[in-house]
Length: 261
Image 1: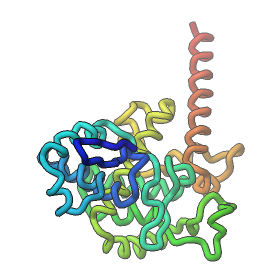
Image 2: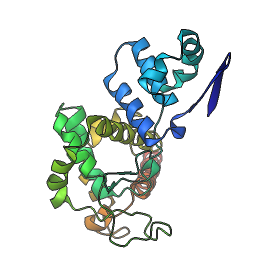
Image 3: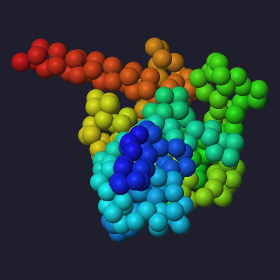
């Protein structure tokens, strides 16, 4: 947090995405999602970060606003929002930060929806995307002890359309904020697994534009089990295993090349 002082006025504000409240993140995410005039967006961002009402914000004065504007530039710079800032909404719980408890099966369906939304421009795909991530809590779950590392009920693809219809009624700013978080977490996943994803930004799109079934199938076998077992594997664990397989493939390829020369 930072506090901006000017004459007798002082304003405390977050200075990173990690310090935002869920409400602030939803407001900022909507600005980033829709874009617009630079100055207008900066003023809106400042009001969101200060938490002031429209009336109180007007009484800040031009001098104080000018003083504050440089301290909110981080909002519009390159960022990665991987901290979970909307852990629960209307009784539906999302994955934890950085996809740490996201499993391959739900990620597979989420990716199919992501591609429909981003590349086929099907706006309605945002609802099943969120439905693949956000679910009700397990009955009588001990939140404090968190024995399963995941409060959510198990993912069931058969229920996806049912819950997507419910999520369709959520406010657009909330849905856009969840999409932004998902988008940044997957970008981190791509860049942290260079052997799995051929190119830092585009490899994921070309390899897995129909979901992750091919990845799950490539991992299935004597060591890791059936495709059904891979579906229940955490995404980060699956990427680690896949990276090791790629390393082994490269090693064998080099050995073969050396033997033939």
